[in-house]
Each structure stands twice: as C-alpha cells, then as structure tokens.
Length: 381
Ligand code: GMT
Image (cartoon, rainbow, N blue to C red; front, side, top):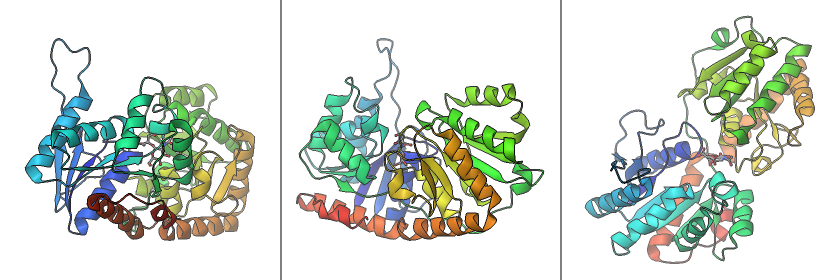
C-alpha cells in the first residue's frame, strides 16, 4: 500500500506512535510518506521506503497567523496525487484529520482517511467549543477511526455523540536495543535510587505533584529525581526545588531523544497526570522493568495493573504516591518483581507486530469500502 502519515513532530506521544507505525509499515514493504512541520525525532536515520515531507505555511502580510491546516491539506493533496497515496493516516484530530478530509476532496475522493484519536484532541482541546464541530465532522467523515484506549473510545462517544464504529488499537512498544550505556553514575552520583518523570510539562501532567511526591520521598530516604522533557510548567518545578532546597537532588535534562538509556537506569516512573488517554511514557518505562506510580485516570488502568506493574492512586494523592515509592525503594525484591511483570506485560500485550497487523487490516477494510467493525478492536485487548 502507499500510505501517508500526518502527525506533529513531538518527542513523545502521538508523534512517536505515528512515526513508529510508519517505520513498521515500511519494514513490511509498504511505501510510507510522513508529513509533519519538522522531522519527527523518532525518524532518526535513513529508513527505506519512508519519505519525509515538511509542511510549511508561507507567511503573508494579511495573515494574523499562518493557516497551517490549509498548508497541510495542500501538502497532503499534493503528495497523494503525485505518489498515488491510497490512505492518509491522520494522528491527532486537530488539524490532521480535518486537513485529510479536505485533501480527500481535493483528489476527488481517491484517498481513504484513517484517523487515530490520541487524547487531548478529544478530552481537552477537541471538546472546546472553538474546535468541537470540526472534530466531530472529522470523526464522522473519516473512513476509519481508531482510539488508543477503550477509555478514549468511550469518551469520544460521550462527548461527540457520534454513531460510527471506532476501533480500539492501543499504542505499542517499538523494538529497542536491550543493552544501554550505564548512565546511573551520571544521573545519581551518590548511587541513590532514581525516580523519573518524562513528559511535555503541560498542566495536564501535574509536574508539581511529581515534585511534591519526590519531596516527601527524599525526606525519608536519599533519592534522585530525573525530570525529562520541557514545557510550560518546567520553570515552576525548577523554582520549587530551589525554594525547598533540594535542587541538587533533581536533574532537569530537557528534551531527550534517548529515553531508553534514562529508563534503563531508573527505579520508579512517576506519572500523576490529571488525565491520560493511554500513557505511552508509562508503557515505555514498563518495557524497561521500571514500575509505574500514576494517577488512576483515563486509560492508565488499561496499561498499568495496580499492585502488579506499579500503583494507581487517586488524582492528586501525593501522600499515597510517596508511600508507594517508599514501599518500592525499601523492598528491592518487590521492585524487581513488579518491574519484571511490567516488562512482561509491555512486551507481550503491547508488542508491535500484532498492533501493526490491526492497522494493516483496518487500511484494507477502508480500501475495500467496507464499514470498519468494532470486532477489530476486540483483537487489541
Ligand atoms: O494529547 C496530548 O496531550 C498529546 C498527545 C501527544 O501527542 O503526545 O498525548 C496523548 O497521546 C499519547 C499517544 O497516544 C498518549 O499516550 C497520551 O496519554 C495522550 N495524552 C493525554 O491523554 C493527556
């Protein structure tokens, strides 16, 4: 198949999933065209059968802001017609799915649109009145729609009241090199255990809860906190550590491409988010045998089993999360057992190949014009 994939070039989340889907499809012999505002970080080296197309919205004095969605739709139509694309797979509804529908019109319907809903495109920004009607249209008019968790599928039906099948195709673990350089001494010079958080530091991630959990943990025993990523709430978190006098125990690394190396030497992953449709970063931690302590929200219970792969606590309950962390730090065997369960689950339930099979099957169904069935989602669980 000739497949277009449209995504944001993010370090995590939808940008990672979209790029890894593209790479896996190309490895199976499909021709993949990736469209994004800049090269997605996971498209590191040369990948056979993957072509990157940069989407640029040219400025014009009349524009108050460049109309990225129109430039994206134009690029999609252009790539679709010149490369004979059959499928445009839009990751994150805004604006990728809406742009793909426009592109489908521009090429006289000779393009099937598959939309993957990732999270805040439904739960936060997508339900904002300024976007809702167009997100709803994108969901209704796509040839196939997937959601990354059962929770997100239910939320989509609840918020948008759409009457169409939405398949649940969960996120997955892309293959990674087993042996990583040992960065433990670099991250924790006094060989203290390492707690880690990886995110885009947006309000939804509640990074201040991470700081408070860590503050409580280190009051009881030595530990290091590694904060990977960047975003609007980083400055507040950094000043909190300074104000409370524990800045020397916290390492803010900024955005990192190689999160596998960081995770491979971490002991506990913290994800106290306000909502999380799936929690890809938690799954990545699990793949590295790192137990997860997270809030019991959204799709996280579909990924992390409480008491098995880590702990799920009520939103904002930093006391409970700190207690869980201390339990794990004081009981090395428990930490190892949970880490092993977490890895087993990540690499089996969320293995790449069966999930790519599901995307392929969905594309085939979209191309054959048959309605995508809800049964396909059942295979994902
Ligand atoms: O929705 C977002 O905030 C961004 C999005 C992304 O592009 O990073 O994250 C969402 O998609 C990820 C990949 O499917 C999920 O693992 C995240 O849980 C989800 N974020 C939220 O629901 C907050």
